Image (cartoon, rainbow, N blue to C red):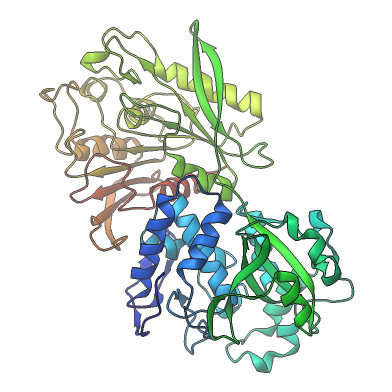
Length: 546
């Protein structure tokens, strides 16, 4: 268990949390140490359910001091992430976001800050005080829209709390010194009140306890006029007792309460019942097969809930790779943002190496037209699953990234944008005819990549056949896309020890967006330690949705 430490607030330099929004983070000099230690422990428990991980995170924070109002310090609204002091909702939120970060394999401080930003602020951007989510009901509903939370209250026999509108903040603005725009809060409350708060009455709690699982989030619904939920905790089921872990104002710290949920609720004068909310499990793919050129081929597909006419991203593995289990990190933004992800399986050459035919010497026995294959598969997915024809995108790493260059040079119109990671432009492609259709393009590449060398290998000394340097490859793409100017920006480090990333933006009058992420000292990888790679790719694609 990690104990509490003296809090020493510091204000970091701006963290770039997306291409479009920056935020400062207020935290103590021990918060990041505690968070990363907990997330590493969570990441090691690969067989546990989300709820079990949530309870594990809660136990790691036992003894953390209870301090109210840590988000409401005077001054501009700033993202605040605390692990050395907390209140009830911040405790639950922080534990949830640590679980999400661990599941996404982003177990460093920056990953946690990104997730807190997305869960705490209405549009995922720090703006004003009223952009922050203040009512727990809205926080739960946003979690449901992101498909990371499921409200089980009604399915457990819950009822609507009739005649109890949510309006406490607008009715008592004097109690919120930082609240300047009361009308904005009224609009938030009006939106909340479009649906009634639901709850399981106190008399029914004992009967439903057998259906409550370790790691569920318990919310205590209040009779105080205008308020929805007065307290929250994380369920722990031990020795047949359904209890909970919470940041207790009475105890002054995070504790495992000695009472059951039913006993605690009954002891609170203003409590009318509870809500039960559960973290969802990580998104997964399903295996499918199809026939192309007389051969059975396979792919793995993720469809978001209600996934009709949604964007589609095809993700191509590298040379010798497998589609099964490839880059599952892409599934997390897919779940939250509502797009489909397909991982096709490349075919093996004569030495058993799977991949995509881009003309390597080792692929001379292959006669496959993989541009035709990928194009066919995209159309198949669009037809079979009702996915968007206008918003289909392609990304891949290494050999998969090279397929992005093949499509950039072709006249094919299947994809609306392309994103290569550690990909190359083969010399035969560079020297040949090029298409005339501009297409949004991005490349992520490490300067110390010893597989796909930044400086290129036109003579083919390294065994892949001749290929161009990254600067030369990007010059060809920027010319195709009508770019005449280049601007550079050094992105803030993801964490101590991460590689510096220089973002090159190519532009010009009527130019098509073109980006290069230069990872200084980066090797042949998806660059997860240096970038939120999957979300950077998605944000790029998202800007080109039609």
